[in-house]
Length: 505
Image (tube, rainbow, N blue to C red; front, side, top):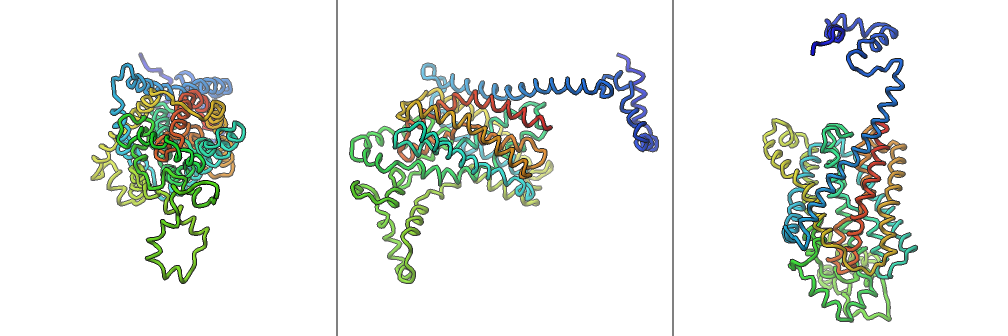
């Protein structure tokens, strides 16, 4: 097709010598407007913003709204397809892939794919300046957990679950999936070239999600661990009956019939049992009930006999207050030593390498000596999203277990976690943005913050429930129904988030 003469002439104007170009740009305002509104632009197929500019802008907005909905739905359809594939492969009647294979895949995700993803993207993005700019991401995890605790308390007051499941209702509403599922959503959203968040969408999005991992791990081994402690009265009922031995026999540590839910997110966490992890240890320390037999519970005073023989001089010099001693014993029994898991180690390595320029140039530059190692890690990281969704499909294929939580409480938790909490998250992010606490103009930053309020409860509740011997069936049933309904709630809110965020672009 022969070129348009007027287009050629226009290109010659733009490709003129430097002096002519400067004369055009240094002309008065009227002449400049005439150049931008010349009819040659229209003849060359460009958007005419003069005269009919308002109409063209309105047409662009209408088209943008349709593309926004499509951009929000397509990533979730991709994830849903992967989940359905995992569900079909794990069906008991077909069972193309046995449960043991899914468990091995979950261990690969936890020990290899997820750490590689965190290190590759967080290490490349993190700097000392970014470390200071991203401070609201971990704070937002704490805020979402606090709001979730308040909603969980309201659910327990309104729905009135069985007394032994009140704390479970609170914490399972509060603590969401801040790792695997947000990473999968970000990876799916940024998979297309025309994603709405720019060319660095995947790298920055994964870096933002990974930056919150260390806070989530701390919450798991402190707040979640202690909130999932068996209630004192419930423990006594189990201890005096025969049910306790039956439960222990049904779920030995190496039993291949253990539900996939137990090992779906943090495999091996239930094997890190401490001496008193299945006992109401905090209740034994802080509660003194004379009419309850506590012969089977550990005595906190006996835990310190060895320490007393070694530190008699310090006790003589300074008597430790009783409350301080109790708090210290609880802190000693908190398994914070297990915090150094592969994802946490990858996060720390990314901080160390990314924030030290000589180390960063040695790994992350294009001509870096270890660039081939980074490429290998990036290939492994690419397997994380499909593996996570296949495992989720395998978990859903097992179906829900029997639960004593009650339908009303289950529905209340689902509504609070999947529908009410995201609305609160929109308010928190809007308030933080209006106060100037967020990075200006970074919509992916805000999208990740909103995702922290949108995901269902963390899958690791199944592992912690198994480790603590408390609400195992209830956690399995609740997580199943939450992830089923999350397909619809996440779709709805991501469409809303895209409309809110991209309207400011």
